[in-house]
Length: 193
Image 1 (tube, rainbow, N blue to C red):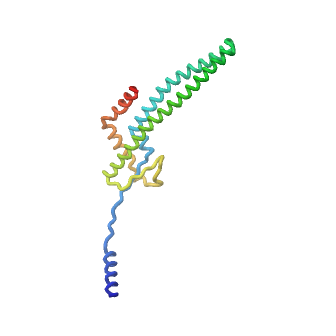
Image 2 (spheres, rainbow, N blue to C red):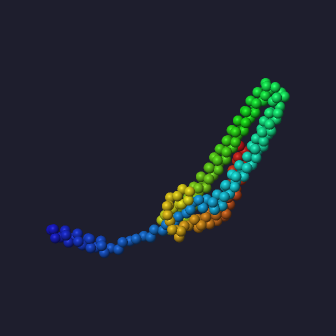
Image 3 (cartoon, rainbow, N blue to C red):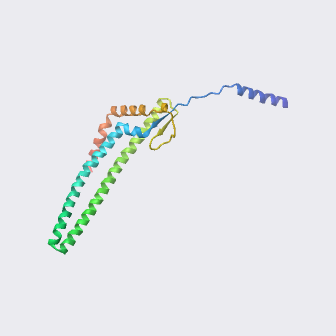
């Protein structure tokens, strides 16, 4: 009985040693996410859109700040002529206006950050989905990200598919009919509010 068990054990080990190991090729690549976001046309368009909005709304606020500075300069020249009671009342009004302008600047900055943040999050989510689909379509087992939020510490340049992803994303964005309708629709909704 012992001999039979030893023979079976040896047979199993011989059979398992003779079996060739199946090795599946693992196709990997990486994308430099900071380059991707700099070169992706939709990201550039989004950045330009919010830069233009900031400049436009900033000009309106800057005009109010300029008027305030003129009023403050006039106040100093008129304070001695109009007396202390007038100076105190007018000074309090100017301080209140200055405070309101500060709040308006803060609110504008926060509003633009919030709006651009929502759209940027949506853009990043779309890029991740696209890369996932690209990886499946092109037979990749892994696609890593490098750049600002590096998840790869080293990779050979031959595995860099950043340019391929940028080209494919830009082609998709260019061919998308809703690419131009999106900003206009959102601006129209904002105007109604």
